[in-house]
Length: 117
Image (tube, rainbow, N blue to C red; front, side):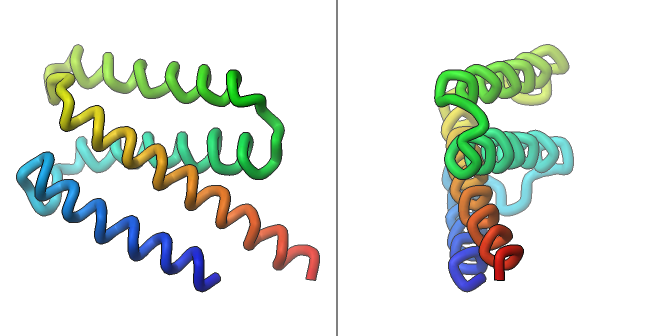
């Protein structure tokens, strides 16, 4: 549990500084939070749990699913003209995917440990 709390706090602090450095804001608006959360959940479920932990997906399938969902989300953002696709937004999305994948893997390990004991 300590490693999950550590990764959550560390990820949140890094996200705060990333928001300040890339987005020039401390707290993004609700629309941005929804899209960032989607990227986090994709990383958490597809990469962290399904690929790294459960081995239910191959790397190719996990990446195809992830890329499809992320590209669809970026196209939606571009279509409604909320955010233009630029380097800062791509870096932010990559960070959210990686943080979600690490959190998903650590959480899956913790849940399995608790269920077997």
